[in-house]
Image (cartoon, rainbow over all chains, first blue to last red; front, side, top):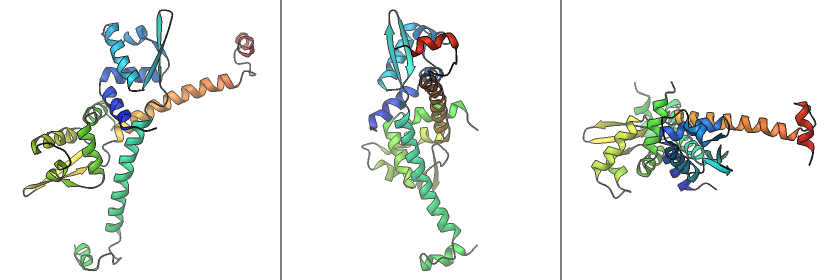
Length: 121
Length: 121
């Protein structure tokens, strides 16, 4: 389920402030392309291009009914990125916890010769 | 604590695959610049530039002792981005939950005149 390309395309899509603002807007509910364009000083064509990048990254989906294209957030779209971040934090925290444990417990003879060095002020 | 610029600089820094690989490597433990450069077919100067972007985004810190610059992960560096993602997911999920509740409970007279319309096949 979790592909590296998901994280990559997701980050590249979200690194652009207008696309991030579109994601924020669509989190609140579906919107038409012209509604999405309103707050931005941009042409419809520019917004459509941003939406295309977001769709390809799996963050947004859209459906055209008649002449109106309605865009929605893709509910699981941020999962891959969230997992990548969680993994990095877990690895870092576990390592720092282990380091903290070692520093907190100078009484325990983990490695004899180092003990004196560590407990001296 | 959470600034928009953090999310922006963090996403821009992580949208580059080499920089993401550096963050993954440093999550496992501190490393010198030359150690970080080894897996990549890149000059030291190119790696130093990537590290600079990561430092400016608050994802990595480094310290030069003698001739060796050692890089470490900044423990809270991904917090702003993780919070942004969590917020988007919460807003989306709450909205979809509300929508799901409405669809699940057609018996409840939420809005009288619409009831008939919704329960008919």
